[in-house]
Image (cartoon, rainbow, N blue to C red; front, top):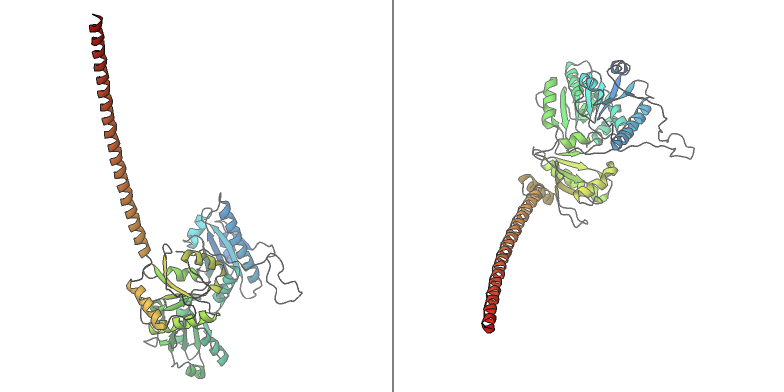
Length: 441
């Protein structure tokens, strides 16, 4: 199930009217920067940029609603292009490819999923699986143009590394940038860039604080207290890639605007365990801490993966979620969702003053994993109700048929009676006539 969301953070008028400089939200200046790519122009346009962002959209001819939607999406791309136009080090271009009018271009570039954004950079193709919002896309592109490996040189940068506990990250200690072991590490980083964060240090003091040995790499799963050292050093590129692919689905992972579709599509047997909690809210923070504790206790369970959604990150989706799932997101919630039809079952948390304990939450999750709690149960009940209704309808039809047969029998009986009455009347008339004749004689 692909979630539909367009969060556009742009303005059509000046939002700050106090004369202050440095806090003005960018306005679209009306200049066209997004190219319409065709078979004749796409090669020359793409060669003129270091990075090319292409939106492969469906054809909207004859559909007014779809045309307006595409205009909104194109405006988001225009604003992103305008903001990135100020970059000095990188030239980033934006283009549109129509699925119907530019099929040859799509085929040449390897675009296979309509309504997707593809980023061409350094001979790599990156599929963007986030919301089509100007600010989210710009932030993602900033990561794209950064080096695949970020070097930690001092304590401030080390503190920043430790504060990033909501994403997968790796860190390694190497002699220098020319080290063959670092080169293998850097090559592996390029394969996952910019989705997985790679860090490195060449400073023995920083390595000591990270508890790293030379040429060693640690893997940090989101929200886990301690990292795991990747076994088998010294590594080659494929060793690191294989380890990440085996551990990429975290026990607790946060739905991020820049990768929301990728995370949602990575379900387990067609279902997701989903937790809603506002990190800045006291109840939400408390519930999130309980979630982390449960995740840490069950990190070795390959069948457990909980998606944490902070409603503050997706304000436009809150009404949709509340209506679809029948829940109130002003307080923490956890449930299991069928990604195909959005059927869901939610943990009963009526007493909002007391959050469930980690044991209670863990028991509920075990019931989900064992199938005791299953959103598909509603479908089975609906089928049973449907079958019962069918049976009732059949019974009613049978009763109606019986009534019709009875009515037919009654009609036949009445017709016979009418026939007998007519015969009796005829006999009576004949008798009367004979009697009159006798009297006349």
